[in-house]
Length: 192
Image (cartoon, rainbow, N blue to C red; front, top):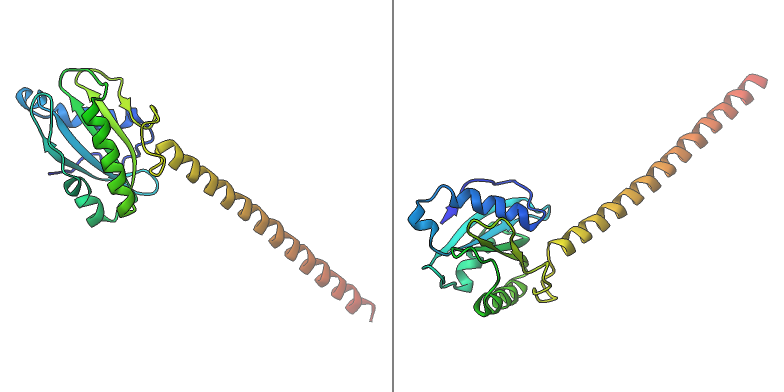
């Protein structure tokens, strides 16, 4: 089920994801808040939310997740990357063995599809301190995390700034040479 809020918002850290997830959960009935939810958040290259897909609602302690369902909207929307998130109604935000295995499976699936899994965030209901697989270095190397993505974006920005400065210097030199030639021609024309 697609959720149509927070679209366009930048998610630069796990706490941004917690804000999004908690704002969604607050709108649900108390009974539903006590169930585990699993979301796939599609982002563009600038880490802005393109979609939020509630992939599954489970029971008190488990949701059954299928890889094809997690990536369905990401493929359709042409997303660069996904951020996975789910809540633990118990309030504990530590991952279970199933959470770790699922994250590896989904990260591998994303790699095959060319869609990076940037992070998997666990939100403990009532606990505003998230668990981030990226921060814990539990995402497979092939996937990279939000910090890796931001580092690549920063490197690209620095590269573009450097090229822009070089182009400006070259343009100034051309203008200066043109002005010098024009002045020289005027002086020659004045002495003739």
